[in-house]
Length: 349
Image (cartoon, rainbow, N blue to C red; front, side):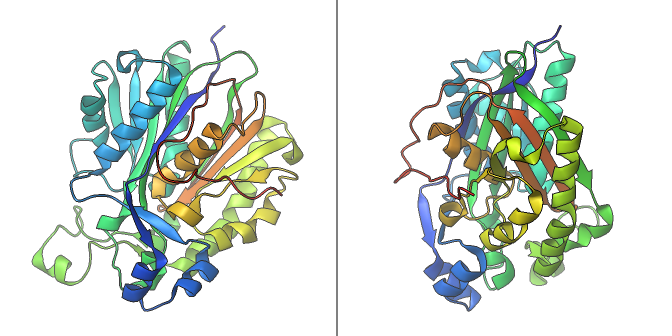
């Protein structure tokens, strides 16, 4: 019998610079009040000029490994979910491996945009299970969206921040760990979210730079419709396959896309008395980092009890969607990193 695999620890890193709505509002031609009313976001973090995605990811990974009581040499896999890699190649995960000294780990990236952490969690859990359930993997979600935003575009400039979150996966006792995951992609909707230029279809050129082709673009209404049309069904199917009712779920940690949209879709999910955890007021939408950053906040606050059912869900470009249901294993949690006031988990429902 193989041991089940679950989350042993969490970690996160948010850059020091705090960017309030006032600064973003000036460039986007809106107001602080408008941003809060449309999104629930009040501030976000911005990476320093010397920081790349691998730097944020490595620090989040270090904190998760330390919390687990492990050494980097104990790690078999490092999987980094990002859509803002340091560069097209090599994989950002290989840079993270070097930065943290986990030289025995196999490393690769996953790009499912904002769903990436749940995709990476699913893949890593299955690799560890195939290895016999005794090894350890580090799953990281990290993005620096501040480098690809058009700050005159109010649809996107107001939403995003920079950050990284991580989790260490490893063996847990029977009955705990990752129970079920659900991954879906709607490639026919891929045009809703994109960075059009910089790849093989539109290589970087003076024309793509002049035309703004390297900026992040999003059809906000289309994304909202995608979430309402697809997220409730994915959650329902996941629970059916788990043979568990929605009212058993204690914690819901979603992708922190937009607080208003999440509040709207929340009643459609059928999660009864679960707590909806939001970190976006302080950190905005940190892409693939948003689920693990929020999970780390909840974990380090001591809000996750043994055997709590925790549902993670995310959606992003592609269009991709991922959900994972975990029976929370006993873990050690630590005080939050020195990032100002503690990151709050909100939304008891």
